[in-house]
Image (cartoon, rainbow, N blue to C red; front, side, top):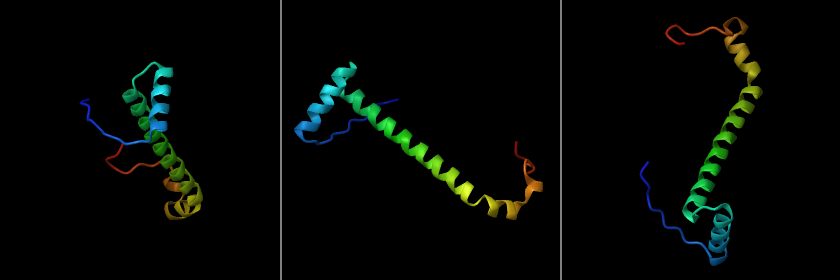
Length: 80
């Protein structure tokens, strides 16, 4: 995947912390920041899935009433 340059301004303490953490991990500051963003994006996705599961639990009775247990496990024609 091609790389894109991203310029970010941070205070000196943050910059030094990033340099030190990257050094401790044996990687470049660029790679360290990239991994932090990827981890953060993954957590957001995980949070979304948890919220969707909570929604389904909360409204389980509404779905059961609307679609009934007889439809459980059935598929629409043309779907797998």
